[in-house]
Image (cartoon, rainbow, N blue to C red; front, top):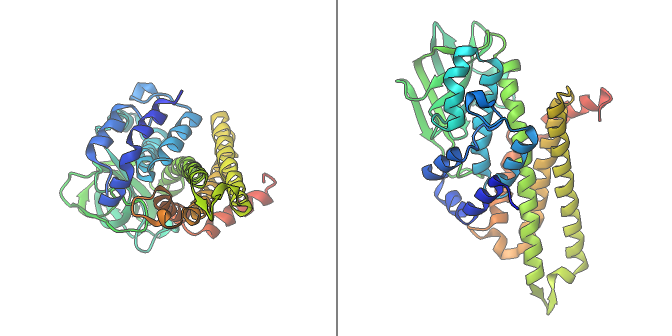
Length: 360
């Protein structure tokens, strides 16, 4: 019996290639996701959420990720901003923003990356002085649709985060098209020209390590599960393909080399899923190791999606590079997931430190 999230994902599977081709998840689909209660479902019920556990949120993202990375990204970015507000907002900010985020009345964008500040977010040039925000952000997922941005800036040399209404004068949005992957995620570059700011989350100095740190941790967790879903979907499609195709009168599935590739892909898929499940269990227990295990799961799942998608494209042959190919689309999306917080080496350094601390 499929879950509600799984059933929803299946209901739109046939449309996902068209979203990718035309550059956006349609507004009516976004509204349907919100109406089904899939936005920030881990927020407490008193704020309009559903009190979902990390495992439930993870399975939602696995189901969505196995259909469309942009659909999963919608859940990711909304959850990132909601997690930051829940953890670091005051009572007024929680009451104002969380019900709007869980219901989809307000769609969120996470605005941290800049031209000179990608994996090194401490280098942001956006400033918040005298209550006015000035600067620009790049590659904001669902920035083209967002009603509110969680913005990382600097105030008096200290990192600070603010919630900024996208409808205010001085906010300008430039849609991004034609990027390698995530083409349906309504990505945009955003500028803030002397925009008044009323909602600052946490004191200056807490903006990066605390507020943004909370958002990024939530993002890594949901991206990890989404990548596990991508890897699983690529393997499923490839098994179907080789079982139905023949080469030289012999079914592809009978070739030893093909079976060996499928075996390697199965290992990647199972390992990614189990690392995600382990990270979810630690989060539910409140184990401090959950932060590092979430990073480990994201690293492994993104690599799994990339590896399995690459094998899948090759085994599909010409069909794998067709404009509407699921495995081809996931191959591009997986490449983006591997660099979304910087090159693999950035994560490897953190994981190396984790190993040295005796928790490999």
